Length: 282
Image (cartoon, rainbow, N blue to C red):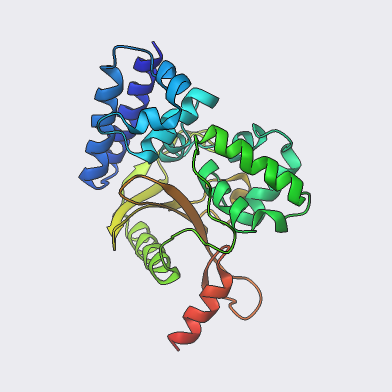
């Protein structure tokens, strides 16, 4: 039964990606993965119990990114990637599932880092961004790293803080942000019906999928409680990015309200790079 559940989730991701105009490569990847999981002669959980996440990666058509979504479902009963595509993702509940992180710290993560996925949190835990948030001592950050490694099925050492994760350039992220806001303003994007903060069930949240310089991007306005409280649901843009193995991370782009970059679009967490970028294009 678990194989059927996981296959259904993967097919749902594929369907949403297709409806939202995503790269056909990504659509077919999830469709193929669903067929592989459905056709397995044994429960997928048995493979993970014996071989860990590498047992999933060894299956035909299952890359590391999709394997981690399957692993997350086995560990937590949810697929964050599916929830984010539906616009119904509750990052507070997701982060509260981490031992030692209650509602207060979960809100601090979201408000300070502007992230809502476990993979993005893992990046922050390894590049020193998480430890800058009040309440996250080096010991607590280390505990979060260990927990995330288990839930995401990491079996190899993660890069050290001085070895940054490969990410799209600030210039590229800002280009995607500009393209998304222009298309959203011109009503050229498909609309989804977010589950959260949408009691009338309206399709109001535009979503864009685009591939640039080898990266697959998904962009949509932030639908978090904080964005609604500050009336920034038409300003804050969450940009998820994936490589060809479906490794995922994200950034939020906002209009800066103070400091030297006031009025400029800024990638949260990469403000220094944004200052350097704007200085270079003057």
